[in-house]
Image 1 (cartoon, rainbow, N blue to C red):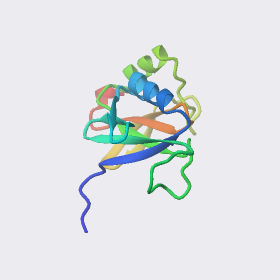
Image 2 (image 1 turned 180 degrees about the vertical axis):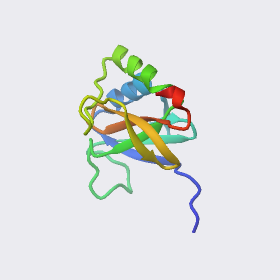
Image 3 (image 1 turned 30 degrees about the vertical axis):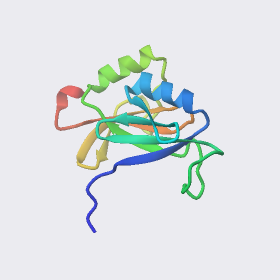
Image 4 (image 1 turned 120 degrees about the vertical axis):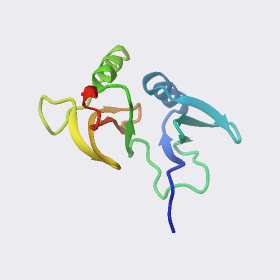
Length: 138
C-alpha cells in the first residue's frame, strides 16, 4: 500500500459553533456544511470534520475526547506576523519547554520548521509553523 495524503481528520469538540468561530477568525479556515448539516473546517486541500461530544457520527474513535489533539499547521505568513495577529485576536501563545522562547525549532514532515503554540477552545494544542528554508519568516 502507498498512501498519498491526509484528506481529513475529525475533532470531537464541546461546542461546534464556538470551534467554527475560533478556527475561522483566528486561523482563517472556511466553515463548510455538508451531509446532514454536519460542519467542517476547510483549509488548503484538507478539512477537519467536527463531531459534537456525546453526539459523534459512526464510526468514531474508540474514545473521542475534546482537547486530546495535537495538530501542526504550516503557514507562509512569517511567525512574527502570526504573533501580531494572535495578539489582536487576544489568543495567548503557549509556553514552550525553552523558557523565554515563543518561537522554537522543530522537525516537520518535510524537514526543519520553526513553531509557536496556541490552544483552541477545547484545549487542543495547535502548532503554527514556518518552513525553515525561508529564514525571512523568523
